[in-house]
Length: 224
Image 1 (cartoon, rainbow, N blue to C red):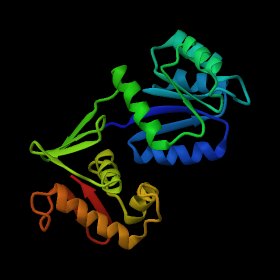
Image 2 (cartoon, one colour; image 1 turned 30 degrees about the horizontal axis):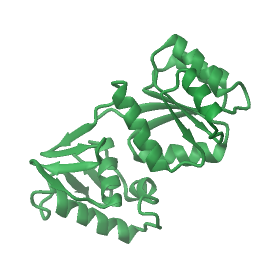
Image 3 (tube, rainbow, N blue to C red; image 1 turned 30 degrees about the vertical axis):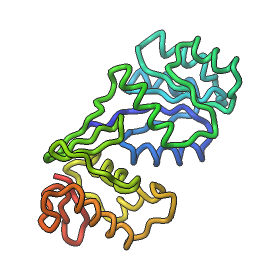
Image 4 (cartoon, rainbow, N blue to C red; image 1 turned 60 degrees about the horizontal axis):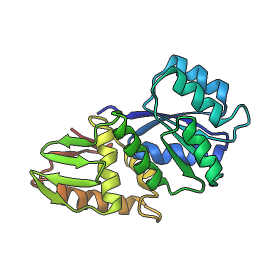
């Protein structure tokens, strides 16, 4: 499965680092720049499925950047800003923005809004499938052979990580980095073992002989 590419234009380094890591675990590939000029240069070289723009930038501003993007291509745009007043919202939407999220925002809500905008613009395929398993990322539901499977937030996040890295070897340390904040608590190596066991029990036809999530002894795991 190909990850959706996101252009993040934000000059707050902490937001960039935290949001990039979170969105990576949600199946997005993020390229971040801190100003208008760099964003336009990157857009000339690469293609994206969505742009997240901060309104207040050290170089340029999000409104002007949105207008420039919309003049050149049909790229969905979501504004991120501390300004939640009605005037700022209307200005952003008049510039062609597809949505508007005020800081501080909840990362999971932002990811859901991103998927909604991309789905509306035809930039995302909401249903992922693997070995009889079907994951509707728009609804957050998982089914196996037509029967819904109920996963916890961390189990669902873990499954998305495997689906977004299908065919790739994932070490235990890499998995921990991807899911550490999904449960709102610290996730250690023993906890990871427990959640992989629980996930297998829910998605595998025979958890004792897993056909989806394979253990690569001494190295990690792989979703075939």
